[in-house]
Image (cartoon, rainbow, N blue to C red; front, side, top):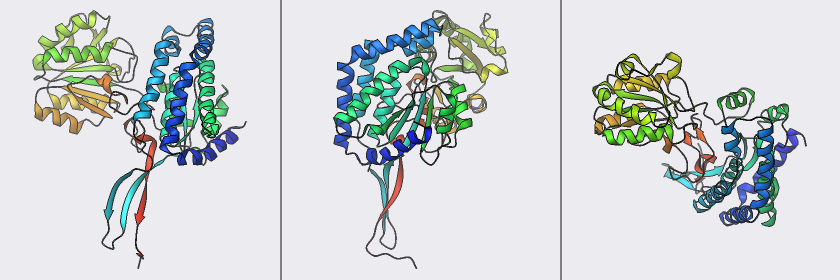
Length: 414
């Protein structure tokens, strides 16, 4: 099937998905949940093929770990479907209404975007998450997973289409790009009349390639250079726990802390204790001159470090004179992803919230909380740092747009 034929099928099916009732969508999702549970040996068998091939060609341990599907991952898949099932259907929601002087009642109604092309790497559970969110929000979806997880993705795709067919709904609502030919993908990215939105999930190289090749709007984030600023009024016992969690709980994620900013009035007390805690987890520290006067064994940080998303147990530290310097640093080096302040000062907390314009800004909490599930959105499609119509984690509402609706009783324009 040519790229245009595949996209055309998805486009035609998008009119079906947009008209599905909430009850029908939930029945499809419930059926998929049951199929994953009953066919888990089939999924695990296909995943094992991918793992064996990955080991044979020498893929990294971290990549193989992300590809792996086990009982825990299967439970997470079904749990994410359950989360989407429990969420209200956004399609058809009237978000606001107002009456004009001529009596016309004007409102905005949520509608599906149409056809969403999701390109992702490594993690097979994205296949299920992306379909679940697109279905519940009334969209058709084209899935392109990484070649390293091809067998796993095919297995899940088969079960997804079964769940649709068994509920009497066109399986064309979901399409899978089952080729590793890059030109095929590049041709899809040019079909702006058939595909409405592209969402790439993966490393910076993948995302930049998609943006470069696409004629279709792209929702994405390039990287997460996330900061925590420990203010002089911070509760230090809280700060120790938050900073440790933000760096070491899962360092290879886009919402892990990459730079720690510390107010100079507490640096002498805070940094030595923080260094001890980081050392227990093997965190390699780089610091500014002020930091290195306090922590003698810290490596010097250069200009490039402040821009770097390490995705590893490496952390840059800067001692700052005040909140203004901390905010200025974030504005210069940040990626608009996730930033936090630890403080007991009400005014400084609100100053930070107002002036740092990242997709999630936190007070006294870990950057690792920037996640659709953690924020109550259920499963998420990813995190956007583009300011098109979605900014931050993309849940069901972010996979819809609003159209204007109006109710009149004979109004005319003169």
